[in-house]
Length: 226
Figure 1 (cartoon, helix red, strand yellow):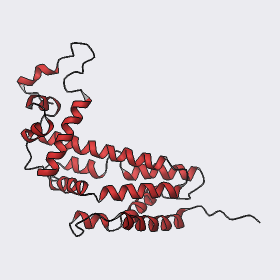
Figure 2 (cartoon, rainbow, N blue to C red):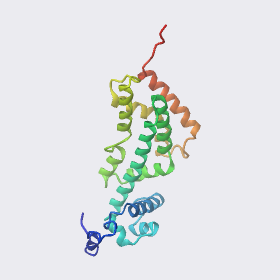
Figure 3 (cartoon, rainbow, N blue to C red):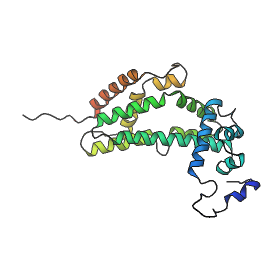
Figure 4 (tube, rainbow, N blue to C red):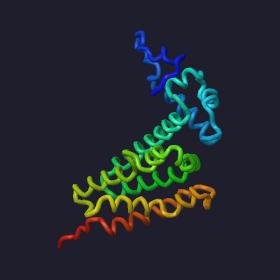
């Protein structure tokens, strides 16, 4: 990372007293990212400036550059921050249920509600808009190292091991449930054909249908003994 000459000194080790080294205070970093999120969501990537972020986040320009050297780095960090929070929430929702159907329901409701939210759709459109300039960001946003498919795969593997599911191709099954759950909602929202997010009732109907199809294909059928 290239440092500007007038910022180099702030990277010296902390004097003591439990203070964070410059650029390493997690609360300050989150403060900046929260301000950046508001700016990017309101103005878009191209129109937003680092000055806009300093005003919104309530920090000096010098402080901002200690944490992020340019707008591209700040935008990437904001996207990663939002993505990580959602992935953690989804993983928790799956882990709280012992039976696959309940876990799939909570996952599906959370997944579709999040993916069709106006702020998320706006962020995705922004990412797609900078795809040519920031291809790595676009790849990481939609694939991850940790993404929805890998989280779903871990969940399915657990229930296969516990005898509740029978699946030969786990990656295929994970993708199938994601497709079944999202239905046409996501594409319609992303491309502007659905102006408002679907209602909870609409999402519930689609998720229950997705689970019915998924469990018919992969659920272990337990026969009652005489």
